[in-house]
Amino acid sequence: MQINETIHKDYTGNSGVYQLVLPLNMEVLIPEDDSVRLLSHITEELDYKDLNMAYSSKGRNPVFKPKTLFRVLVYAYMNNIYTSQKIEVACKRDINFMWLLQGQTVPDHNTIARFRNGRLSGGIVEGLFNQLIIKLSELGEIQYENIFIDGTKIEAYANKYTFVWKKTTIKNEQRMQEKAKVFLVKFNKEFNADIPLDESVVTTETMQKAVDFLKKKQVDENVKFVYGAGKRKT
Image (cartoon, rainbow, N blue to C red):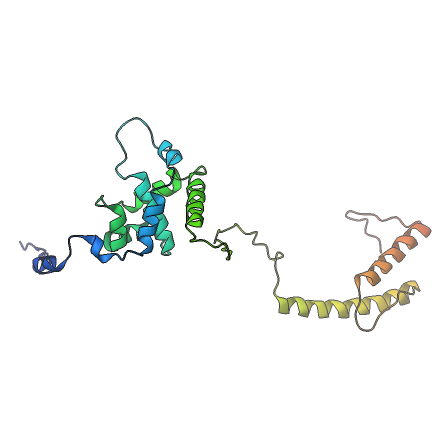
């Protein structure tokens, strides 16, 4: 009987060499004017009362400080990182995210998603961002000279009649004009009408005159319209 054994390669053989050159203090790697320091300073002064109330007062304390998770989330948005999986990876690999965590365990993507969709709901995130903008304005970091539009997705009514392309509109308009001119010529001849026909374009006002003519003819001749199967009238 043959037994297949899987041999796992050891990738930690040279780890000691790299450990010697890694600095133990991350402070030396982050410039003093880095945006992550400004974010940490400003968010330290925010009022987190509503956010803390989103957690139950009974039981053990949360594993991750709500204030720290909010900082991580804001800094991720500042760097165009939006999915919870990518934020988790950034916390493991990016030195600035590690600095924000201050030695805390890296939150997994499920924790980040629950925090964003659960704890920050009910207007909590709006209140925190409002405080953040006020603080930035007081420090002169916002000049209110630019307008930013978010990428909120709105459900579309994808009906084929809700939009048309410009070229299609122009083509259909030309065809409609040709049909309208032919119709009005036959209309004047058949009903002995005198609807003015401009050679260049048929306007809605011209078509309305034809409709008014038919309505007057209906009243004068006491024409009654019938509907339904077997009641069609020429």
